[in-house]
Image (cartoon, rainbow, N blue to C red; front, side, top):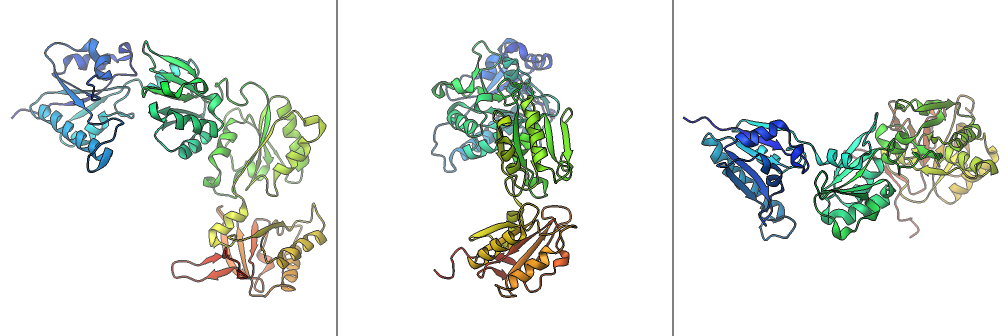
Length: 498
């Protein structure tokens, strides 16, 4: 009985025949069967790259796609047409393998990197021996064509197919250090719009037919969408070396960011990108402990009661050319550092220092989500701390919010030095609302010590409330629904009066 042949997935690199590896060239010359994919016009880029290494007498299996980008009348659409094609192509190669003939299946770039080879591999590897010969990827070739370092140190690289939606592309671009976008052609207009929406267009380079005689490299903003072939790529090098990335030129800025209320997954990709790009991290010691600075990143921690001094320090660093991330918990604009930075930045000494604020998940929405939707209708957000405003002002605002029948989210309810405010709040509430009014206590929501308790104003125990607790006081319409599948608290969007 004839032994089966072996399937070889041979990577050819990005297009230059001289970038084919020595092993790949040897296998191409030795194999009795050479297989390659091609479009309906019959030409194969893979075969043209491998042509210097082919010999007379080899069997060539040309696997012609039934469709590329056009429509199809296949009953299962484009996906079904390709699935049938891959199954039929695998059957053709299996005939050679069962006859004892080795098959070299050519793959542009690397066989397991966005390659057609993998569809054959998955269908044949269960029956036949298969081996992969890696190739130089188009990402590497494009980076080389740009002559700009792609990633350095702890920067990360993201590879994205241009076939994603504009919204998905925008989100990925915002959160990436460095990235490459493949599968352009008809997708270029969408990719360009996503780059612009993410604020990364000026950092992006366009590379066409990397490593070949037709290679072109130019800024992505200068590309004519009508002239973009499929074999092209967008590359955004990491900020350490990208000459167009914000902060690389030496002009400083302050970016105020919010980490979210506790869980790492609640830190947005945009905030992560800003933290990674910063030369300096400035913030309250407790918040900075949530971060792992990269090598070379300077960390400046301080006490929570010196917000103005911290803001001035950050602006001074930026004035000297640093890219400074001022770190808050939650959202930086909700009882946090954004206001302090904005106030100080408005002074004459800092008029020329750029300041940006990047939003984060705030504690009120985190606690609300944990119990359901108590903030589903109009609500007020009030800090119980009297450090920056008189207690009488706080009481007056709470009375007005109650009179307006608003849900109220209470920040900063108590601390070791402020233990009397929560009992005073309970007394104030009982003067105007029913003891049965729904009240939620959320402590360290998203953190390792998270606790949630739905109670009423009358049953509120002030002794369990500390600085890490947020209170949500319901309106007259807020409902705590007991359900076998889990309790939910919600405030209907339709007011009872309507």
